[in-house]
Amino acid sequence: MKQLLSIMASCILITLQSFSATDTSKPQPKKEQSYLFTHVKIYDGMHDTLIEGKDLLVKGNKIAKIATHIPTTRLTTIIDGNNGVLMPGLIDAHTHLMVVEDFETAIYKSDQMYIGAVATEAARRMLLRGFTTVRDAGGPVGGLKRAIDEGVVPGPRILPSNAFISQTAGHGDFNTAMSYLSPHFTGIPDKAEIYSWVKIADGVPEVQKAAREVLRSGASQLKVMASGSITGAHDPLDATEYTYEELKAIVTEAEHWGTYVMVHAYSDGAVRNAIKAGVKSIEHGLLVKPQTLKLMKDKDIWLSTQCISYSKEAQELGISGTPMEPKFNEAKKGAEQTYALAKKYGLKLAWGTDTFGSLDLQATQSDEFTARAKYFSSLEILKQVTSLNAQLLELSGKRHPYPDAKLGVIEKGAYADLIIVSGDPTKDITLLAHPQKNIKLIMKDGKVYKNTLRRGK
Ligand SMILES: [Zn+2]
Image (tube, rainbow, N blue to C red; front, side, top):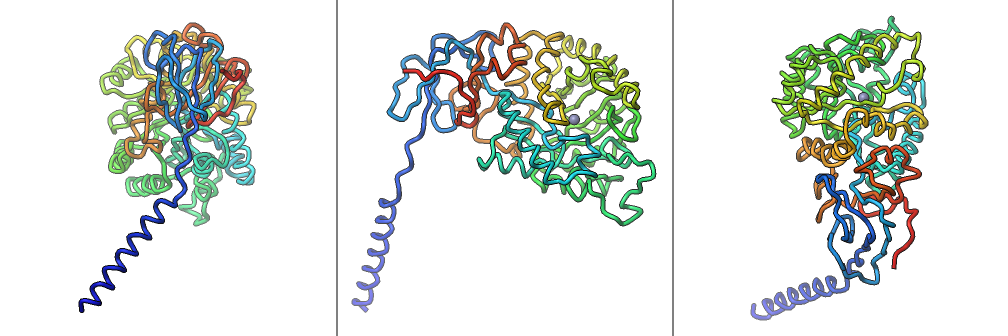
């Protein structure tokens, strides 16, 4: 017995020794790459004044220090900012990365591999315009997000809504044929649903199922079509889509999952319906009455609207003479008043573009800076596109796909998502409308994607 015990004891000892031997023989973790930015003025995304005379150290994928005389190691790359403004990477709160053609063509007529390939390039170009994070407001973007997060292809961080949730004949019912019959009647599955572009759902049980399916697909928030639209195939702009009960059911599903609902809504009735149902982010909202905007302020609801589309005329957008023209003109009229009142009431305003279509059309994303300058100061716009948008994204709670650090700010511990702009965007926001020329450096997650600055010493 004694012998047996001693054999057992020595076995345990050998096992322990072999464990510790394996431990020490493990390759040591690679020393973290670090970057030191010198000769920069820092806009932190929150305050009105620039931080001057300090350097910024990035270690791994986070901001490690903002100070003077930061010691460096052999592995530190020093980048001389040439007196530019270092600021948080830009955030767009309303993109559609997968929508590289008009909706109907993309869904019903195109090879989905083609859509994926073009969208991959769209994501790369968006990152190179300085957008390090986007909230994608609908479309099957989950696969692209995965490839970006895995480092396979370059692109911004994505908070995906994935498939739109829409009622029959709603804004998400993208088949323009009036004779089109729903799968409900024909039993023939629809491409929009097979390829996860849209869930067409009517009635409480159907919307609950649709919401749960979209949440299962990894959406960080739900995108619901709650009113008529300019580009919609069937719906008049003033239409209210979904009943209160249906919207409420979707909001409940989102809340049970720990996240929230954003809705496409123009008309006053639709926005009221959405507010009552507990929606947290109103997209567009250009036909709302002043008292509804006040209600949004009281209930802390975000207005996520886009100035870029309405800074142009129907003709410039190539929609003269189409059914879209009168709807566009109506929304354009509402836009002026909504922006002015939103500013007056102090609403929480997101910065988003809703630019979709060809790569050339998507490149107009940065024009939002110029369009918005008509209504807001450079500092107001800078806050919207950085820390305010990041605050909006935090509504995703535990479903936020990037929970380890803050986005949209320059502070110790935040994600190292930053850009360096030549000139001072706190004084002239339109510098950001020309990213190729004025954004000298783009870093996302501690990795440099563009650098036209010289190496420092
Ligand atoms: Zn949109």
